[in-house]
Image (tube, rainbow, N blue to C red):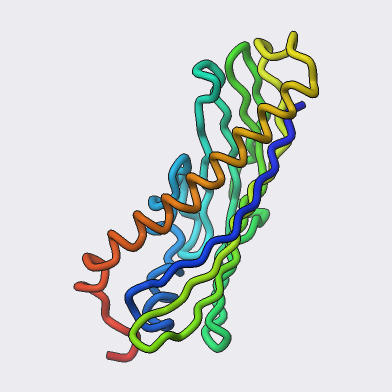
Length: 186
């Protein structure tokens, strides 16, 4: 088995007031596109999606982790949570392994808090990724401790890329979204 576990905390300044920042980040289907290595597979409801984490490691091994997620927003506390959820209408992901490939289900989560800075918002968030996959057949000759060390090193780097890429891409895409944004009640 390959244990994939990663977590990272990041903070950044977003160019809008907290309520606008929270509205921007609460559309799970849209903001999923800002996460490197992650793609949207299916939208079940406005706040429920299936996403896929996919990466090719060591130039040869494809790792795919599916996760069904739900987003909840606390408008009073200006908090956003994205967490794993069992979606009754979602077909289960069957684990698969081949010589150079491993697929399965995993857990992905984001907790974000938004702090008022006048015309800007400080966003502090934590991303967590966890999965247990069968080792691709091509890795079975490698000692388990070596595979574990390699997997942890790669996971740490990928989670860093996801967190940093998310900040960059989401902030760059904000002006276009802001131009068409209509606050509720206006």
